[in-house]
Amino acid sequence: MRLKKGLAISALALASALVLSGCTDSGASTDAVPVEEAPEFAAGTTMADLAEAGEITIGTKFDQPLFGLKGTGDPVGFDVEIGKLIAAKLGIPASGITWTETVSANREPFIQNGQVDLVVATYTINDTRKEVVSFAGPYYSAGQDLLVLAGNTDITGPEDLTDQPVCTVSGSTSEKNIAAYTTDIRATDTYSNCLGPLRSGEVVAVTTDNVILAGIADQNEGEFEVVNNPFTEEPYGIGLALEDTEFRDFINDVLEESYEDGTWVDAWESTAGKVLDTPEPPAVDRY
Image (cartoon, rainbow, N blue to C red):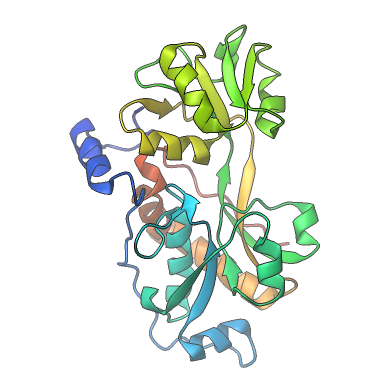
């Protein structure tokens, strides 16, 4: 696993953290975020309603290691920790959160019909989605990256892939993007089918979004590492009801405060930061 940029973490401490995290939860819960006591909000706002109820329903992934992964208890991961930060500022503890699984196909419908109050689920902000839901954030910018064998220092980015064999999923955006760097693309139907060729040396790298690669590295401890040099950008946002401007502004305020007081970094380093470098928090979009 490559050393984190700008972080003084010993190899022993990092190895211990990975052992403690295990392969099932893929992320620790901080649960130390202070819950706001008796917050006050303007009557009629979503914030006031949620704070009065003392509970909130948050949609997240249940199958995304390091971001939202559910084992036997509540889901864990970076997205889950972001949801807890927002709830805490509403005066709602982790015990007052109902976690609902949201997959790519149901995120907008769940928001539109009120099944969830918000969605934090590796949810890329784009103009098409903005037509039916609103977004706070972004709170993280993902990007396409490379997965290589642990200890491979020859590949530091896509520029090192000229004439080199690379595996990805057929028909994916990742396949189109990597074609700018190599013509030797071994396409298959799932990313798991790329791991055998990577282990055997048939390919030198696997490529897709860094969050997917990080999950693979986390669940195959010691075998692979993420290069940590993304070459595309996917801004992840928090989905909420269309035109709920007050709630959107509130969430953006919470995010900006978490950037300043270090709770965002704490959430990252206790989850996705086990595999990926700690990035600079992205500026929220106040559209």
